[in-house]
Image 1 (spheres, rainbow, N blue to C red):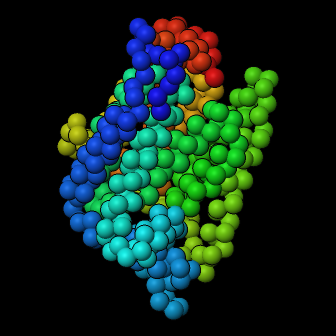
Image 2: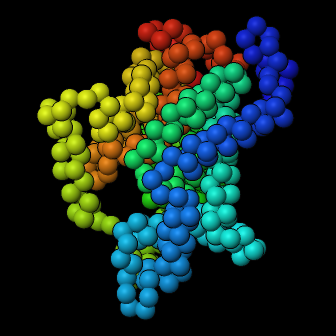
Image 3: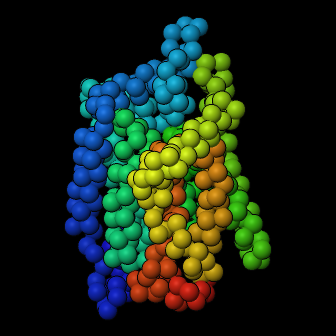
Length: 360
């Protein structure tokens, strides 16, 4: 993680040594884990039982018993996300009880997400800005816990998949993008947004006369490589939810927001997405032209993602917006820290209201 002497920070400061940085993120992950494990309505044992039932149902191709489809909507949903329950089961087979294996993998996924996010930000910024951006994630992510009654083990791996996917697009690592999309799709279906972002990136690259069709194909290949086998495996037991079966959530969101007219309250649960990112919803727009292509592609794709959440998701569950962290955080840092903490290889961005040259 530590850079070379030539990559020193502002004023010639040396990069942060990797050992204290690793220790810092270990304790930050433990802090996030403590907030998650202790602030829920249901215990971690309850969460582990849900995910264990989902793994058993996945292995039975979507059935909870012969001829009987999964009845629990949450177990059915987790059943279509086999990556993390499968890893928990692998650890449990080594003699670790399921709840302990679940908790361990949960903590490790938090740490991995933070470390990857720091490394992703260092593609553009010095360590100081990378720590600042990762701290924002750690400070705001507990807001995603408040409306979920128990831990959902796919949350932080989802953040990890989007971070690695956007990092791969930025670095033009097509194999890395395909792998991140493949694994991310086995973890959660929202990774389809990575395919959209890659597609927008291809369009932007074509318009700027540096066509990069391979990036879009890599994301699409990784997504299809996971989605098609999952649909085949679960087709007779627990098929994916159709949009029609989730349209009732649109009314759910409208009713929640309408309470602002009946009982105005600044912390209405349906306003939590506003608080999750705060000013970061707006800051990237101030320096749009100076942003790297991958972040502009992410910002163009974000409204579609938000529309999906509004129509078939839950605004009172801001955890659904976690894929936006790798887009909004670095884009906002470019505006908040115009050139001050940028790595030399990233170029120079001028003042926020005076968009500078495009950054790789």
